[in-house]
Image (cartoon, rainbow, N blue to C red):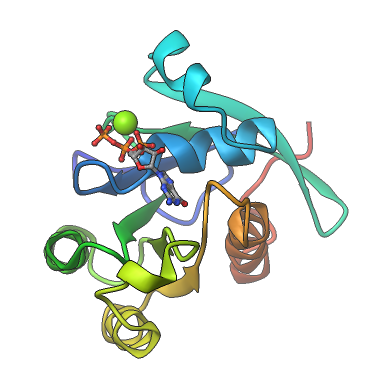
Length: 173
Ligand SMILES: Nc1nc2c(ncn2[C@@H]2O[C@H](COP(=O)(O)OP(=O)(O)OP(=O)(O)O)[C@@H](O)[C@H]2O)c(=O)[nH]1
Ligand SMILES: [Mg+2]
């Protein structure tokens, strides 16, 4: 695929495409894992296509680049939906299908259900997300960016699973 880097291969920077419907919290997630907490003021101040951060995973320092616009090439993808918005879940399912058509099952994908802090307004249940992830060979977690619940942990687990898939993926420089 011209839109992707063959996987697995050694990389200096792990490029992650963060995608999903409008307003699901893509920017919130990126800021949360890059800065540790979500600050709505940062969103308007910073309109960058990607943010970079070093993350320690299983004693290895991994340089991660999180892209909110589709980069020319990427190593893995994070698909986010909003549990309070069912149409964002339908969008995520379409996106998962698209990714699997484009890349078969070789592209590591993490499906994230965001905004679990607003549980009263929930429209998409936990088991629906779990099933969708299972059907599309993706990892899954539920998160809240405003409360920083499971955000960094999900990313660390995801990268950890890539490391265990192939230790040669990341260069040691
Ligand atoms: N309650 C709640 N609100 C959230 C959470 N994450 C993001 N939001 C809110 O959802 C709205 C959209 O968040 P963004 O991070 O801008 O979402 P986005 O996917 O980047 O949006 P677009 O780029 O405009 O499509 C904002 O008002 C956020 O404050 C969360 O975990 N819980
Ligand atoms: Mg955004």
